[in-house]
Image (cartoon, rainbow, N blue to C red; front, side, top):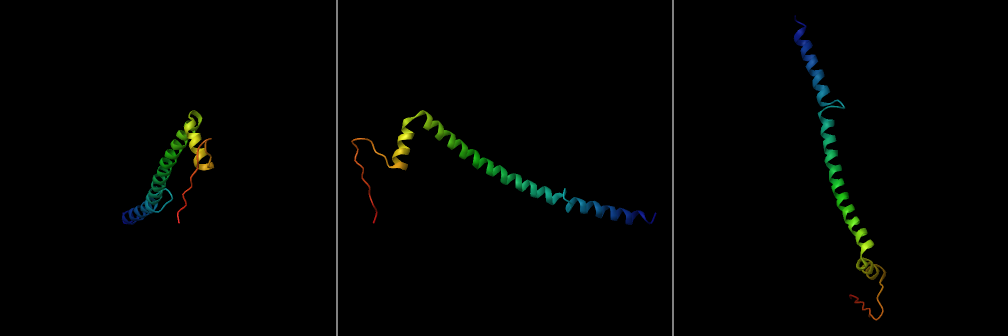
Length: 90
């Protein structure tokens, strides 16, 4: 009968250790929840970027305005009869 309280205390300490410190304990669960939140944030950012790129690809496939705009801005092309003016800041 005198062994029961110390045995229960040892058992309680063992279970508490497992709950707080063990690899499947509360601390690890908290770290995993933080990692999930970060991954969800990254996924939202990448999804928005993908939607923007999909819209750009669709625009390039269907419309000539997007192609013309890219040719003008990125390649410096002009149409026949146009005059190109470049303003240089001092």
